[in-house]
Length: 176
Image (tube, rainbow, N blue to C red; front, side, top):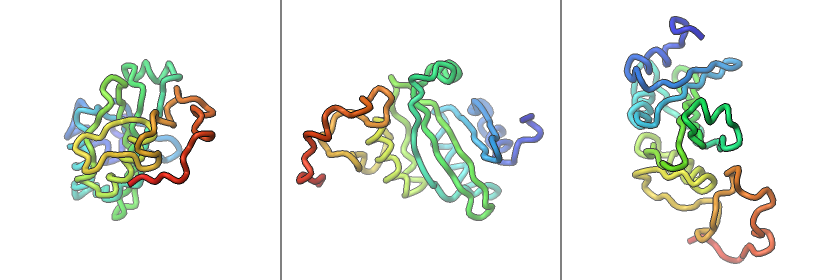
């Protein structure tokens, strides 16, 4: 995709954050922009508040563990995780995927909960499953697993059959 044919959102991101864009992909009409972690909070606020873009709905936050994919690791300076935000402009009826490489030795990223309230729950789920810490999150604690659970089940190094949880899980205990 050549620069002059980029959609408006990519052009505006590149104008406002010229060094932030690491990659742009348009696969089957699904636009993905991969950006540096350093600008992610400001960039996301910009995407929501810019009058021409208005990405006012955060549909999902998740992550991907690329620890077993050497080509992807090399492409993003060996960042093990890729944090993924799915945005929607309900006004423009346009979707955007924003990806952010996150290194294993720097497992934190700013929380988007002050921009989109729904990020509170979505970030908690990503924290619970991958161990990525969301800075300035209003209530970062486990949401799916018990509070005392060790490990992060969606990481590639987590045992496929678990660590014996099925046999020892206390179904009577509830997170308070």
